[in-house]
Length: 90
Image (cartoon, rainbow, N blue to C red; front, top):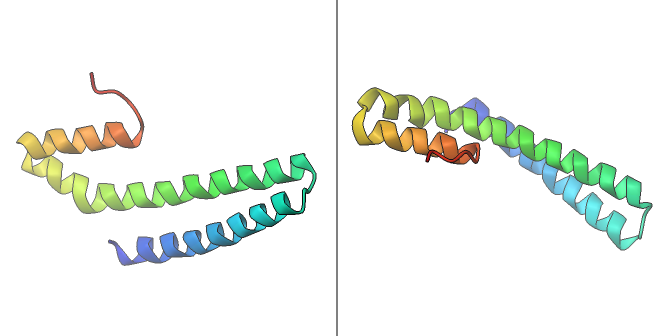
């Protein structure tokens, strides 16, 4: 894993852990529903940010090499990208 991306991804997971603990506490305390939803949406945005980092790492570390090799590796790279974006290749 690219060191800078790894550092940023681990930082993002720490933030997510805190957000999840906060969400659980809000639910347990029966906070106002809209406040809980707002926190849940913030967690979704944090997960999206983490996914972007992980995808960037995968593209830079693996996909570029797979495409260069061509053949089956190229096809695997394409399949993985379609899966990452939940797009059917068929």
